[in-house]
Image 1 (cartoon, rainbow, N blue to C red):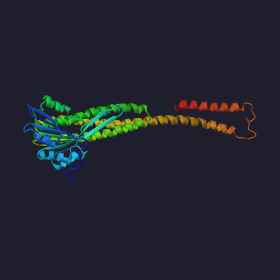
Image 2 (cartoon, rainbow, N blue to C red; image 1 turned 120 degrees about the vertical axis):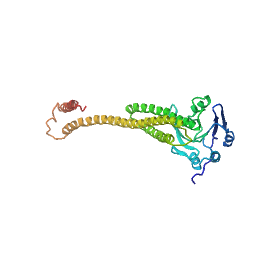
Image 3 (tube, rainbow, N blue to C red; image 1 turned 135 degrees about the vertical axis):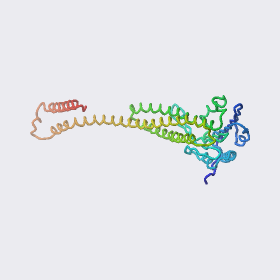
Image 4 (cartoon, rainbow, N blue to C red; image 1 turned 135 degrees about the horizontal axis):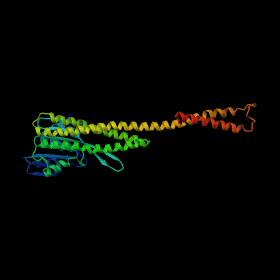
Length: 341
């Protein structure tokens, strides 16, 4: 039924980290269970709970009960993947985003994406990540630890803005890697004729489509947060969201440009293949055309009539070969003069 948290416990226990801070203080700890985390939350300041890896349904339900999170939103956290979206509730926002990254394997290009569910209210932020093998929030954590910027002076909405901004900034290294692959494929498309390049182009096209599915809704999410009149978002944070929106639009424009380029690369490759095929067919056509009159001459002199003029002539064989050579040479000269060869 809708709102039912169904699933099994993850094979690898998730890692739960708590960062609670004020202007003067910072507490950062790691816990094994949700109950331990909730019991350590201070009474004042901004609290950020980050979960690396999916929680078991019972653990997620206890976390949702503490912050009064709706069952449908918790269901979306477990039932992945969800389309990126923003949902506003009475006391908090629920944001679904997709993070992108690449693993630079020397033998194969690996493209990974994962869902991150973000809740934020008046003085708390919760991020629940699909996997536990790293994220793009390192700069935000360093900013909190080192008191860079105004994150320690602002509220939970500013922290949510920084997390969204880090997700969008993480798109650009992925886009740069795809752009480099595009340039390499463009060079190969002109030089190679194997089927492997078509498979690589198709693979890159699918990856660009997946990236577009993440970036396009992200732009709409930022626009909704920017325009939504809610006491959970201060006017100053909305000003910062404009910059995030510009970055999202820039990333989307680059992705759209790469998608158009990959189609052009495929067309270039197919055109090069057709051109090479035409060259081969041209050679074969010229050879076939040359042998038409030669075959005619050979068939005439191959007839077994008794009274053929050159049948008993001493130079008849040389005459036939010479006639064939002159005919072929004249045809080649004609073809070259017309630019056909």
